[in-house]
Length: 152
Image (cartoon, rainbow, N blue to C red; front, side, top):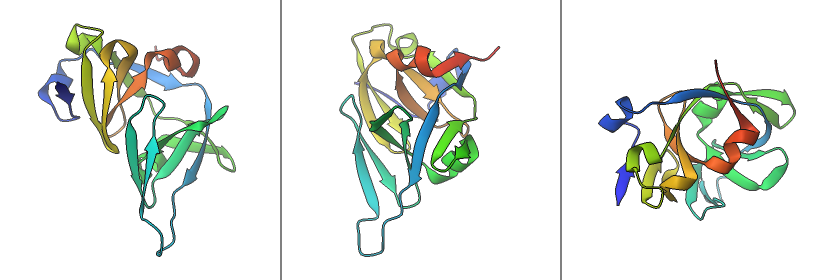
């Protein structure tokens, strides 16, 4: 099975396009007490598991609190701006490329190594996103029209 990491040479060859998020999000920092587990596993809607560590943020779309994901503390604090208590928007530009540009086969599964763990996705259903520090993660195609707009 094909695997992708942020530092793979193919990343320099891909035709990433810049996008900006248009939706609000809710977020809270994961701060377990010393007598509790210092990591948390969050299951994605497509069945992957992301692992957050103490200090990371648990984020969800404003209108969908059950669909959570983990964002590294430093990346969150660089990429998000608080609008009101617990409500944020992602101010950082995100670059996207269809995963089929890599696989040439929409049915091929691919493992994306994000900062929070590896995720296996079907390439025809996802884009590859690249963030402010070069980190990568899969983003469902269906969420792009409602949450992101191309940057001119």
